[in-house]
Image (tube, rainbow, N blue to C red):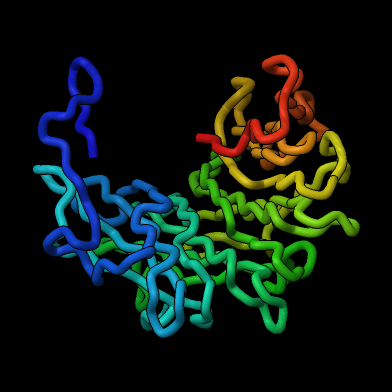
Length: 324
């Protein structure tokens, strides 16, 4: 961790955190990938910003089951005091621990139920859904005054996948729903919304073409809810007026980022498509309109291809692999 100052980031007072740091929960093991994903938020009532850390290859009851760990903020910076971790075997956390679930491969913080606290979504791209391997899922833990709670919290923990009631589409082998996540109150209703990438999804026979799902949050105890308007949405190239078309290896949804790109009331979603044009890469943008993302609105949607934005692209450039 590098500290900020009046002249920018400085190395003075910098800190290195690992599972070997005194007080950090759980044990350090080879290949755990502590820090693979990160998210910040005020998960409790102490007024300090905390850090959620993804450890997707942590071994629990199953190899590479994964976990997330929280380091608390304090008046002196991050502290391991009171830090904790969650796995699929933690009481109240949804999901079945299996080899290669990789809980924490992605994390996103957002206030999904509009209360006073930040909540956490954690991707499990290797989670099996029924008999469908690596279809992928996302766990959402809602926070109270002491941080994310799995019992007696403001809202019950949720697990989202393509078999969840009223979620668009169906689980597919190897789609890895939850590979990427982004959270933002895109329609400014006081509760955060969640975008979920499934970049390895097979679309119309095209392997690893990819797809993205958006779930909307609602103030009150409901949190993320697909039964209420505007429900959920699924984005696939070439459908619902989204630009371009699905092709094998596009990896649409590999990375995600929200932002207000057009200065309109609603925020917008950028979607990485690093496999586009044989790996030269691209970034798609779906613009927000009134209460939801809407590619048919005034701004519509766009795709920025590597070969157009920066001149001729080459295979392996993977423009759009990382967004933020």
